[in-house]
Image 1 (cartoon, rainbow, N blue to C red):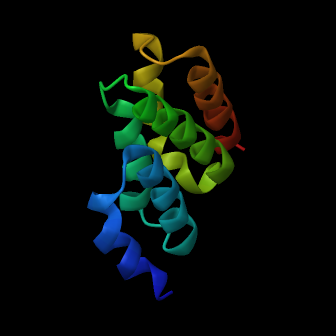
Image 2 (image 1 turned 60 degrees about the horizontal axis):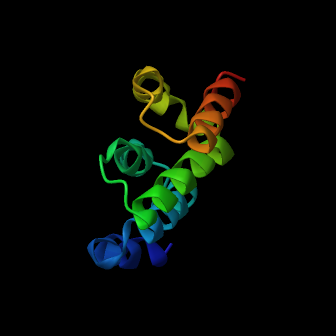
Length: 103
């Protein structure tokens, strides 16, 4: 798709919430592990500002939507959960992702 190089090029310009959408689009268009890693990296961020919180919620939701094609992210997501660093909604979405990825 012609959109892939444009998204890759513009990614640094996006705020983290928009990056989550862009990584999800790349997961759907290209589907490489690098694209899924982009969502996981947003979840790993220590930032707690409102935009970062939206990015984390969106990343967790997009992983849930991706399900089995993103199963390579399960070990990293499982490591995040015991740390309790995410808000309950994000934690619930991540648990849902882990269950769906196992299907």
